[in-house]
Length: 165
Image 1 (tube, rainbow, N blue to C red):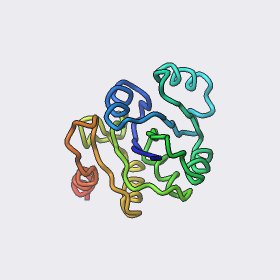
Image 2 (image 1 turned 180 degrees about the horizontal axis):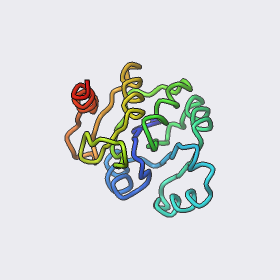
Image 3 (image 1 turned 60 degrees about the vertical axis):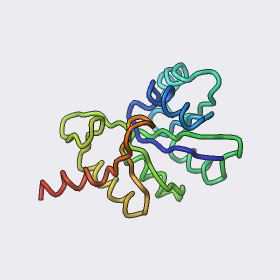
């Protein structure tokens, strides 16, 4: 089957992903893709503890993930790719990884970010990366869990960027 969901969520692995998304889309493999996490042994251990034993877990750098994804996912794998940020998603696309759609599920608030959806806050770097992804033809949906209404996140991005013009 291959990749069944690409999700931006700065918490990476947590209950909504494991209990909600994995079950709904019958995923059997979670692939965390982030350079910093791939190099941090403590993060790797903590993330592995959050994944039930029946799920395969891969924690890869952006370069490693691009190589693996371009080579192809085994037919029996149903993979959720978890990314920390829109910039990581854009980096994968720029490495020629073909993505059709991305679920934007969670980007937490911090200084300089504006809330555009209940669980999504963005700054200008996030916005620019999202616009670049959209220009590359990638659908960007805002949804926390699979049962939520699917929202085109770019409508929300445009509302805040137009308000600043």
